[in-house]
Amino acid sequence: MDFISQKMRKLSPELDPLRLGTGWKMEDLSKPQILIESTFGDSHPGSGHLDKLVEKARQGIADEGGFGARYFCTDICDGESQGHDGINYSLASREMIAGMIEIHANATPFDGGVYIASCDKGMPGNLMGMARVNIPGVMVTGGTMSAGPELLTLEQLGMYSAKYERGEIDEARLCWAQQNACPGCGACSFIGTASTMQIMAEALGLTLPGSALLPAASPDLLEYAYQAGRQAVRLARMGLKPRDMVTMDSLENSILVHAAISGSTNCLLHLPAIAHEYGLEIDGDTFDQLHRKVNFLLDLRPAGRWPAEFFYYAGGVPAVMEEIRHLLHLDAMTVTGKTLGKNLDELKKNGFYEKCQGWLQQANEKYGLQLTRRDIIRPFDDPLGRGGSIAILKGNLAPDGAVIKHTACPREMFQVTLRARPFDSEEECLHAVLHHEIQKGDAVFIRYEGPKGSGMPEMFYTSEAISSDKELGRAIALITDGRFSGASTGPVIGHCSPEAQSGGPIALVEENDLIRIDIPNRVLAIVGVNGEEKTEAEMESILAARKEKWQPKKRKYPSGMLRLFSEHAVSPMKGAYLSYDEE
Image (tube, rainbow, N blue to C red; front, side):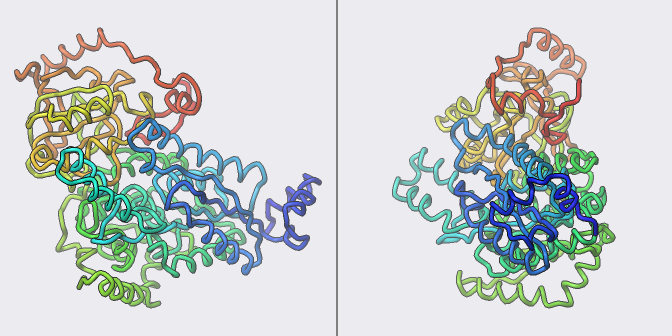
C-alpha cells in the first residue's frame, strides 16, 4: 500500500525531525500513521473519560503495526450551557469540531483515523469530519453513564427544578437530585441526542458491530476501543474509506433504527448534515416517510421507563436491527469490511447476545429488578407504538416543515385548535409559564431562536416546565423555530421553518390567532384571527399583509462564531450546516 504519509515525508524534510521532537521513534515514521481524534476534556462527563479509550485505541493501532497520533477538539455540554446564552453556541460547535478534524487531517495527512466521542455535538461533529476527510477510519462511541439512586437520570432534573419553582418540592429534594443525577462518566443515561447519535454511528456502519452506547464503565468498551485501533490500520491497508460505505441505503438504515428507538429530534439536524458531507441529501420528509414503516420498540427514557444503561444489556443496536431486519438494506457495507447482514449473522454465532444477557442479570441484581431483554427492546409485532416516533408537520405556519416526537406527546394534543401566545425569546416565555400566565388551550410560541436568529438553542427549561405541569402538559403546545433537548417530552414542536429571522410565517403570528395541530394528517397551520376561523384564502391574504409590515430583528451577534453561523447556516429542515454558496 502506497501510504500518503510516506509521500508527505518525501515532500517535507521538516516532517521527520518535528515528529521525532514530539516523541516519535525512527521506526514509527515508516508505519501506517493513524489520526486519533477525540473530544476528550474536562468539559462534561461524556468526554472526561475518553482519554482511556484514546490510549486503548492507540495500543490497538500499535499492535497492528501502525502509529497513533492523538489530536483533541473538546466539545461543550448542552446541560451546562442551559439557562443562559451559552446554549446558543451548542449547534455551532458541531461545525467547529468537524472543521478542526478537517484541519488536523489535511494539514498533516494521515493514512487512517479513529474518532472517539460521546455526546450531542461531539458525535455528529466527528461523523461529519470523518466524511469530510474521507480517510479509512472507525468511530468509537464513549458509552452512557450509569443511573443514580432510585434510577435517577439527568433528564428528570428539569422536572425537579420546575416542581421546586412551583413549590411542590423543597430545596433539599432538589439538591438531592442535583447531587445524584450524574454518578459517573458517559453520556446522560436516556435516549437523548448523545445516545441517539451513538446509535446512529453504528446504524450507519461506522462503528464495530455491537459497540454503540455501552455503559461507559464497562470493560467491553475498552476492548472495543482497542479493536477499533486495530481495524483502522487494517482499513488503511485495504484502502476502504467512509464514502465507500455510507450511501442512501446506510442513511435509510439509520433512519429506520431512529424510528424504532424513538430517537432525539435533534437527529433531524445531524443526519442531514452528515449526509451532506457525503454528497447526499435527506430532509425531514425522508424521516417522515421512513418512520411510518417502523414500530416504536425501545422502552427507555425519555419516552419509556428505563435508563439507557439497559440498552446494551438487551443487545444494543444489533437487537434493534434484528427486530426490523425485514426493512433494512442488509447489503450495506460497514467498517468491518463486511455487509450489515453478515455482521448481524456473525454476532448471533459468536456469543454476543449471551454476553449481553449476563450483563442484564447483573443489572437486575444491582437494581432489584426482573427485566428480560424484551422488556427493554420490544418485539416488532408487540411494540410500544406504531408509525415510528417522528412526524413532520407542514402548512401555512411551517411551509418547509416542523418536527414533533409524537411518541412523547399526549394523545389529547394530536388534533387540536389552540390560541396563539407568541414570545420573541425563551426567557419571556418561561417566565409566563412558571407564573401561570399561560392557560389551557394556548399555543405558546418561542421565535427568533433559529440558526439565523440566535444559533438555534434548546428550549429545554420551557418544555420541561410545561410537560411537568399536570394540567398544562396535556392542554397546551409549545412551537418554536429553535430546537429541543433529546430529553424533552410533551406537546412540543420545533425546527419550524422558515425561521422567524428569515421572515418565516412563525414571525407573523399574533396574539389569539387560531393554530391548528393535526399530527395524523401532518398539519401545522394558522386557521384564524382573534379567535375567529378564516378560510385558506383569507389567511393567505392576512399573512401577506403582515409580511409587508414585518422587519427582521437586529442581529443578535455582530461578530464572532455566531455571526458566521447565523450568516451561513441553512434551514433546520436541511440540517443547519454551513453553506457558502451564493444565494
